[in-house]
Image 1 (tube, rainbow, N blue to C red):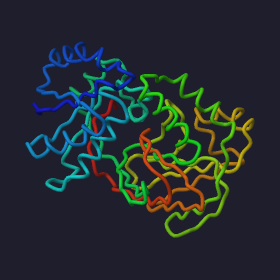
Image 2 (image 1 turned 30 degrees about the vertical axis):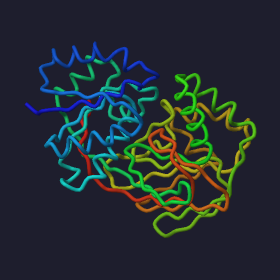
Image 3 (image 1 turned 180 degrees about the vertical axis):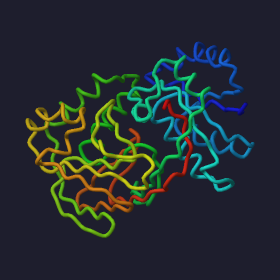
Image 4 (image 1 turned 60 degrees about the vertical axis):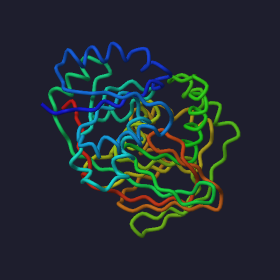
Length: 307
């Protein structure tokens, strides 16, 4: 059997992971999986731990947490150069607030069933994205495994992350941040270059996806395929706040791409430029500001799926 290292974020899900970890650990032991575990102690700690355990010979990681914990582990994997990233396998026990990446692969939110998925060991080799952005006048890179959001999407993520720091989280709070954020938020003019083709438009929100779900179940990039080596891009152009409210169901059922104010594109290399400062989130984690450059690493990480 494989030897697994479980990286556990006790703060995931607003502290739910801390409360539930003894039960999860017991279920893992009963599953007969060979594993060790370590608890993260601070933000970005999962990145450091991942690099450390790769150097110690581990190739199989269990993410016990949410999308943010998964994002840190992905960045730890892609920051090292000692082995190929495709030699590493990631499984997940979802204990986050949104759990959007796990939706793509139908990983159960029931702990026992999620662990059974790990035991079954069905693997899928998916793409990973890279983005360059600016923070404090420095160009920084970050890898992501699910979706990157800009504009309104990033603003809502920032508000939600600020509340998480205060111990407040949940889908209702996220939805509330959407409604409150509509008042006072303004669109921004942008130049979006996709594989060399430039589009100029006034943007309300923008999502670049490898997978399909974000924001706790929204399907803003419904046509994304996780192993096709191509980003799917959804641009919501200048739109009125009441039109946004009326269109919320379309964000959840995937039909948002059919809206008259929406442009859907796809490509391997994407640049986003704007005279105004535009903010970014990847996998729900707030990062920095524009300009942005995206590229993709096709089929570069193995993940455990439920199908």
